[in-house]
Length: 331
Image (cartoon, rainbow, N blue to C red; front, side):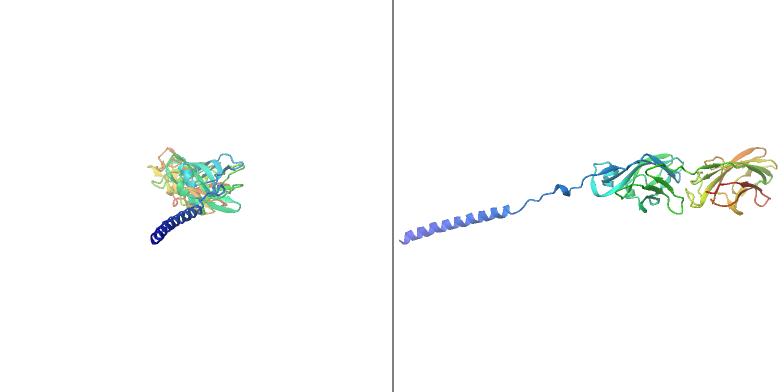
């Protein structure tokens, strides 16, 4: 009896241990089944959007001797980084108006395309260029080159938007993205003539000065020089270039026809020229009057655009200079 009881107890003990093992397995299985797998709902994913600006057609505007040709205009939520790199489009939660542009510098000097001076006017707001470090359209444009790039603005619509280039005090350039493109007011050629005699500023002797024409510019027309107010005329100011033919009719020696030979009286106030060149696009050489020889000079001033009177004064200032009135339009 004692032995049988011990065997039975051993069997029950083994079964109990086995039973405990079964309970552990069941618990483990149950715990695992309670962990729900993670899932991504399709509605949470961003979709790429890209829409052309209705009514847009290619157009261009010039500011500071750089021409911005806008080739395409579209609103998209593509990341600007992927757009700049030309990689697969990456949608974002932010939309931008992107203007694909070419920036042309026809001059012999590098000129800055200043992103801080470029804005988009839209519904009374002025928006700056977004992430300008991603585009070649901002920064220095090399001489005699055209660069491809883009200008981006953080907006989700572009109806009646206007691209504005220029920050105060410069005269701004405005380009609507739709509708007609306004005609550029400048350069404006003027019919002005007149003749006066003055004294050579270098070796004396009489010089006859004949005005052949004049041109108004809002952008600096001469290379190899720096204007008092930069590459673009300021508001209320204009660049005036006067084409003069000078012939030395008395005395010996040559006379340099630079700053000492020309002044402009603007409402009676004398303004000096800041460049006198042998070509209409400017030059490093100074026009020189030689006895019996005619020489052409293009003389440049930065003056008030709305003065009542303009008089070109020629010859040495302290030797009874000649005077030639110029009729200029108010601009």
